[in-house]
Length: 250
Image 1: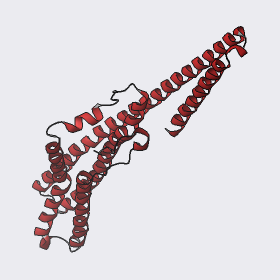
Image 2: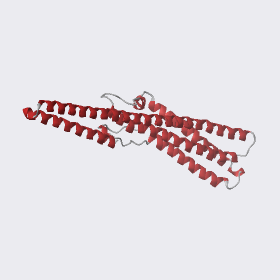
Image 3: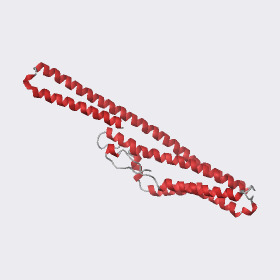
Image 4: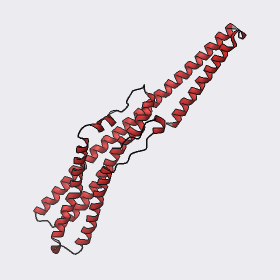
């Protein structure tokens, strides 16, 4: 970004130099042969045109680079969203499988295996969900302001990335999303742990310390989910280059 701005500033300096030369040429008046004046003016206009073409080509290149970055970011985001959502169904399948095994007479120790399995899926889910939000944040705080500098006044590049955040019901949706993820990746493990503790007298002695570790891990995962959804950071943006304030993160 800085190199692009510096390059454009250099072009501005070159353009200003041509303007000064043209003014000096006009100030010389009759001291310059008319034919020489015409030749110099043609050369200056040609140089100005070259600067304009260079600026247009540079802008076109920068727009292409930013568009490519945007497409790559959105592709990565879509892949992570798809993978993230499959983890919910996988967690449901794990819980359903454990519940079915218990109803068929399997040992309650199955529930001890259920807990780390679901927590692992929750950790992977959270990692992908965080990346999805960070990609959106990067587009809004980095790519969009840089693209806006290159487009005509009033243009809103990648407008959807910010527009959809102001839609009615967004807060309700985020709360519902948090409730669902906490239920799947935290409430289910806590329920399994509660059942194990309730039947502790019929299980081996090592079950209690193992269950205690799993309970602590469940609390940690729950805290991470709450922090990720309720304590989003406000990113530093390219405000120095765009004159715009910070953009809220996802």
